[in-house]
Amino acid sequence: MRTILIVGAGQSGLQLALGLQSQGYEITLMSNRTADEIRGGRVMSTQCMFRTALGHERDLGLNFWEELAPRVEGLGISVAGPPTPQGHPRAVDWVGRLDGWAQSVDQRIKMAGWMEAFEQRGGQVVIHGAAVSDLDFLTRRYDLALVAAGKGELGSLFGRDAARSPYDTPRRSLAVAYVHGLGPRPEHPDVEAVRCNIVPGVGELFVMPALTLTGRADILFWECVPGGPADVFRGITDPSEHLERTLELMERFTPWEYARATKVELTDAGATLTGGYTPTVRDPVGRLPGGGLVLGVADVVVANDPITGQGSNSAAKCAAVYLESILEHGDRPFDEEWMRTTFDRYWQTARHVTKWTNTMLAPPREHLADLLRAGVTLPVVAHRIANGFDDPSGFEDFLYEPEKAAAFLEEARAEAERDGDAAEAEGDGDAAGAGREGAAGNAGPGGGVGEAGPDDDDDGDADGDRDDDDGVVAGKAAAVWSLG
Ligand SMILES: Cc1cc2nc3c(=O)[nH]c(=O)nc-3n(C[C@H](O)[C@H](O)[C@H](O)COP(=O)(O)OP(=O)(O)OC[C@H]3O[C@@H](n4cnc5c(N)ncnc54)[C@H](O)[C@@H]3O)c2cc1C
Image 1 (cartoon, helix red, strand yellow):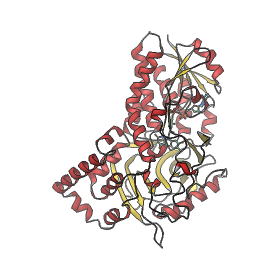
Image 2 (tube, helix red, strand yellow):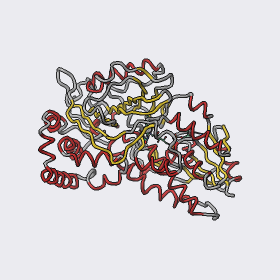
Image 3 (cartoon, protein in one colour):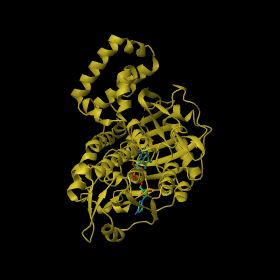
Image 4 (cartoon, helix red, strand yellow):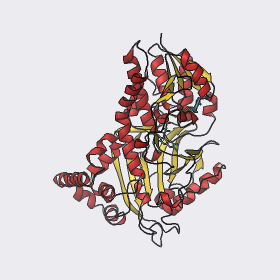
């Protein structure tokens, strides 16, 4: 029987451990926390997972919470327009239907539950924060050692791939709060959706339904431009103060979301998370001092900013690819060549996620703003963007190059004219009109935050965040300034 060591009990480590276990492999899982510690700890993510990733869990029978978690049927985008004396009006507002629903199950529930299932099925869990010296010793005792330790320190075993890592500082400061009591969404009260609210020059507010320890909840997740007016969470350890700041920012920059949030309260004592990290792609093979090799998994080797909500999805896809590759390899040795080939298979998916995510973090380009505005009047555009969250490879067709975007929009307009869609949507009046005016020139999906016109955000700090070279971007030295 082949023996495999997996370090890290997160989305990728546990999914892979359970998948291999079900095929008769002898797996040792090393975790720096027990299931109870995970369950009783802080939230770790917003973990919204789309159809393909959920399918990988379902294939392994790991969809334990599928009937309990809210089904996310749509993905919506709002863009705040330039401020007026009355505040920030909404310039773009649309929702695209997902072809398959998404779900967010609090990782505290999922990882604790999966770890217990792994143990109940006879798996060996070692509670220990692995150090390089441990791995050096342990790799000799296993046929294969995998490091699935997320963005933790073991990542330093894997060299940074500079060609695939355009940033060397965190691009957003992250602030998450899980709440109960959010009111229904007036735009579409019957459709559960993830909503990305883009506030140029400030950041993005994601709002999404989830299942947490205390039942159905909603997540309020600010992605704040470092040094910008929303970058106000550093050093905050008191959850109530965290929620207060979240709501203050919502009232100021996304009043349409704040109107739903006046009665919210935190779900539990561990319902908040702050932090930030530098998006990094790494060499997949780590070489230990004693000569042993380890293969990096998911975030260890490809860590993208959560602005596109892809990390858990990618972790599930990575675990699925690695599982297949291990099974196919049979009894042959897991040498360096096999490790690199296995990672390359995963990179075929991960490269699209990385390209899209890094594009969203870059200063925006006009054609991206055009696409976002077009979502208001052209349902096919909203649909394509929304479903790109499940499979970002389709963005190659229209998102990155102005010529392709223009051709795509032309085709979408022609299609809408044939179907009568555009006329109908334009008849909606406000949203469509605002979409055409408000976001022009400075809104991009996510990236829009980088490039607002001069003092568009009226924050007195305009442009402070726009240029890495001006030294305003915080956290140069730290890849992870805190995640807990
Ligand atoms: C604020 C935020 C919001 C996010 N939102 C989304 C989203 O909506 N959708 C989405 O798809 N992704 C999202 N992500 C990303 C997603 O959570 C991660 O990419 C995903 O969890 C990565 O899975 P993983 O298995 O690589 O690592 P992790 O889930 O991080 O698991 C790693 C595990 O290893 C353990 N560990 C670390 N070091 C050691 C050690 N030395 N020894 C033993 N164990 C160790 C850790 O405690 C952890 O349990 C978000 C991330 C953040 C921070």
